[in-house]
Amino acid sequence: MVAIKRVVDYAVKIRVKADRTGVETQNVKMSMNPFCEIAIEEALRIKEAGLASEVVAVSMGPAQCVDTLRTGLAMGADRGIHVEATAPLYPLSVAKLLKALIEVEKPGLLLLGKQAIDDDCNQTGQMVAGLLNWPQGTFASKVVIDKDKQAVTVDREVDGGLETLCLDLPAVITTDLRLNQPRYATLPNIMKAKSKPIKKFTPQELNVDVKPDLEVVEVTEPPKRKAGVVLSSVDELIDKLKSEAHVI
Image (tube, rainbow, N blue to C red):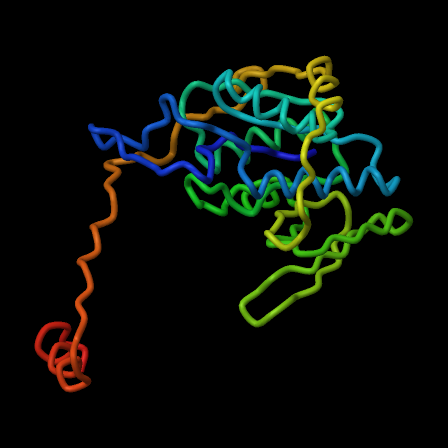
């Protein structure tokens, strides 16, 4: 199972709403979160290696999330699941919904992007692993599955370099940038994706309360940087660092 998220496209310049309640998403290009693309690609490679029987893509949110699911199906996922929710979903709610879906679907592995580029929370994978009491490998840059031993070896990126973990399956893995290069959906696969099944659930059907546990008070743009100045000498630089910047 692979969790994918619909986000504002990475190439779009973000604008804050006039009432400062969030960012503008009306008439803005949306796409699949780049880290989720990497997770889908890794799941497809695992299946192509004969180590999985199917890839199930899951997305949560408004009806437009079906478009993102179709992108995952066009890449090669076998079927989709859409949990329809109109209210904002925060990481803990998403983790609870994933736990409920996993109890229904019983997958051998859950793959997620390490974070979404809209909120940068980097929490959902860790939370769902905690709720399921499954082992987790976060920030994965290499994934090797041993089907006979029902285990997976994960190389993960840490501050000091790489850490290698061996996890018993089922497990939760969150993907980092260097894990793979996602494939492009070909036209024949885009056409096939239109007929692939997408099952719909609501949080109520999964017996999950998605009442927000966070409140966004205000969203503001970062302050604009002041223009730089060209200095004529080292002495002038030192003087400004002393008198204006107060760093020396």
